Structures are given as C-alpha cells and as structure tokens.
Image (cartoon, rainbow, N blue to C red; front, top):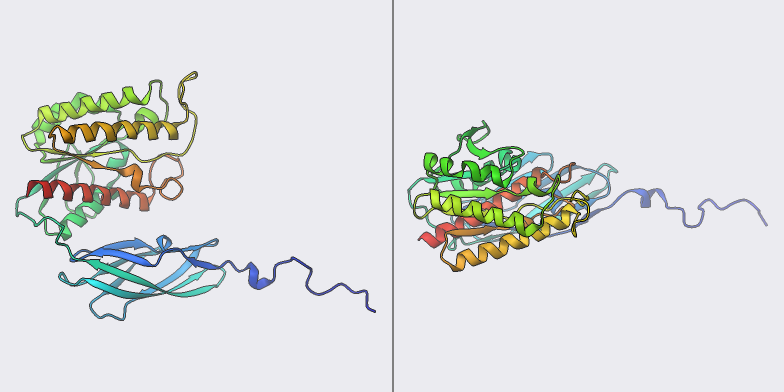
Length: 330
C-alpha cells in the first residue's frame, strides 16, 4: 500500500473553482416609448472580480445598442415602438470566465408622459455640491430633451458640460440657511417655473448639534421663502437627501449621533412636510432620492457624495418628479 499523499487535498478548491463566476442578478430592462435608456452592466451582472468585456446586441433591427465604454450602454428605438424585445449579452471577467445571457427589454407606451406644450421649461437646479456636480443635471436635461421639451436652466453659477446650458445654483458646502438668505434674490432675478431643490446634507453629514426636526423646520422655512418670492404657479421638486455611510458626528450627548440615522430621520420629516403641503394645495412634488439610492452601491469614497451611477439616478428621480408636475399642469 502506498503512503504517498493524494494529488487533490480534501476541501482544497480546484483551479476551476477559483475562477470567479459571473452571476446574472436581473433579467429585465424597463424603458419607455420614444425614450433613450442608459444603464450599467453591473446593474444586471455581478462578479467578484472585475468585468473586463461586455458585448450586447439585439436581433431586432429596430433596437440600437451602443456601448458608451466602461460597462455603460445606451438602448434606443423608433419613437412609436413598444413591446418586449430580447437583448443578447456576452460578459467576460478578469478570470477569463464568460457568461452568455439574455435580457428582456420592455418598452412601455408613453401615454402616461405629459405632451410637450412648446413652452420653454425654466428650471433652477438648487442645492449644494451634489447639485453643483453636473452629472445629475445632464441626465435630467437629456431625458426631458428626448421627450421633446425646450429647456432653460437658470442660476448664478455656471459650469460647462456636454449640455448647452451651463447655468445652475449648486454651491458646495452650502447649508439650508445659506439658501434661505439668497432665495428671494434668486427667485426674483431668474423667475424659474420649476425649482429642483436638494439641501440639508451639509447640515448633517459633517457635524450636527440639533435634532432632525429643527433642521427640517428650517427647510420648511426655505420652502415658504421660495414660494413667497416666486411667480404664481412655480413648482418645487422637493428632494430628500441621499443616504450617507454611518459615522458618529453629532454633538456629544445627543440621542442620535450617527449621521446615517440622522439622515433617515430628517428625510422622514421632509416627507411629512411635503405631504401636508400637497394636501394644502402647494405646488410641491416629492423627489425621493433616499428611496432610490443604495448606500452600498451609489456613494463615492467619502460616504456622502454620489458616484457616477448615483448621479444618474438623481437625475432620473428629478425627471420623474418633473413629469408629475407637468401632468398636474395639463
């Protein structure tokens, strides 16, 4: 009987097992008639090692699939096309594992979308550094433009980008009080028909010494200041702030010190205020950023600001809120 050790040691993974698999996490792309859809391959496939190549195509001649690089794709189709269509995918990761898969592209009819009136939509993007970052503004601009709307962004800040309008009012580091102080001047100077407002992160994320209710009351005062200084019929697209990573930054002795929990309490206060204002007839629409963003997937390295995918989601949440406002005006 040989005493030599077996070639394969028990429980030791083979070379094949060490090759990280690619897992399909979702199989349905949801679009809308006449709209361009952009997405990241990581929304639909997962791998423990980087995905290095992805090829997508459609057998339907009416569906166009364009690679935007770095795992991002754009789907487009004729304006009146709706229904379900197959998208074929070949995904390869850095372990040279390849997965061939299918995605279903569901294009719904856009009967729920407001019909462009031909009048220019004057929008003020208003907030802090996340509004200053152009990526959400670009996303909102492109989505509304694709629907046929004429747009004009307004504000005292200017930042060139891939869209033709550099104007906005996103100021890094600003708190709620800072916007209250200049709201009257902004509204009377620029006369926006729509204010895309997201503020409060700087009142909480770096240090706070007051409860969420007090910060939310100050935000409510800001809403009053905007409405009081605006033209009749102005809409506020009122955003909750994005989630943040957990970190104790509150004043010692406060019942809540964790900034992640504080953001949740603050946003709950905002939703309640918005609901009450809607019931009272105010032209205010909830843009629920917190509900749409995942802190494990959409935050940058500082745990407060967003990554590229997060900013794209921010733009789409504003787009959905904008369409609700336009529907109410029809």
